[in-house]
Image (cartoon, rainbow over all chains, first blue to last red; front, side, top):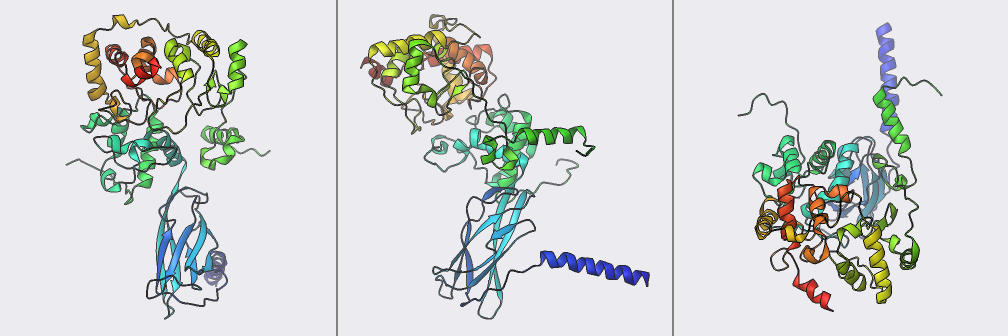
Length: 242
Length: 236
């Protein structure tokens, strides 16, 4: 009897908990159903934990012939803490829906989902990845903007001309996960502190160990790990090398 | 006010967060709030000071902690540069940084005002740390110039950010150094190479931890650079 009561309480609590998180937006009256949903822009942004992303996320619903479809219902969802304004909307005349995204308080990668229904009422979904920087990574991002970006980012802006093409050995962009994920934290710290020559790489990379503090360099490494594409997965315990 | 029983680390964290709540911090993400830079009330004095106020120099340049951060800090400009170069630059401010779009305006000042400004800056804006004449170029040998050239292009790879020779180098980040011998005082170059942040806090020039010999050789090489481009401009 007592167990049954406890079970009842647990079930009631669970339902109460669920009823808050599973609150669905009011259903939209879709006037059309698409065949595919594609990302138009706004994916892979680097934002800050708990802050809105700079650019809105825009997705497009296409019909079977691949052109934009107006009046299809699009629903956005993400991990807890992520908010969308709006969370659901009908596509406009060009087949697009624009939503502003605010990321959760937790730093890391956020997998957002935009979904719509096709003619047979089957859900078709699109995954959009965004990155939220935490405190240390934000410090790293700011140091990157001050010291690194002009050589390590191939893109130029009117305020900041990229120096990458002027270098005889091209630096790696920090998003180049294929290369940088293979390097250990110790190697990255060594290269940043002592320059490329320290690891038999290009001396065009100067040493920063006498300019930046150890915690600055740790922040840079955490930033580089945060923006890696494909994502960086920290290795487990290494008991012996080779 | 409740007693929170914070650990010392937590007290530190809360204190930092509260102290970071300044006006300037509001435009940044909460994770990055920092105290704003306090401006001093420094004003240049005398006739040159009046001229500098008229020309609004401190809108872009910072001197003794007062002024903008768009153009180089001039607090120790008198130690850094040669008077002849400064007067020429005030007359015709050609760009020193290849990729910079911002330009110092050409003020078309009469010679009298240029001399007033140059004299004032050369006399007043001096670092107390060292004498600008403490390393005469005549003490630097051709052997040091050659060693400096090799250090410039190999060990320190300065060409990744600087141009020493317009035909060979392409570095776009720091100022072009092709006219260093006409622009700077050797003692400034030497002390800059030894510890750039000591002369201009926050500069992105990395401290390369050079030995005295290396810094001296590099100084010899840099002071040997007299660019034809700026030499022609000097004649005008």
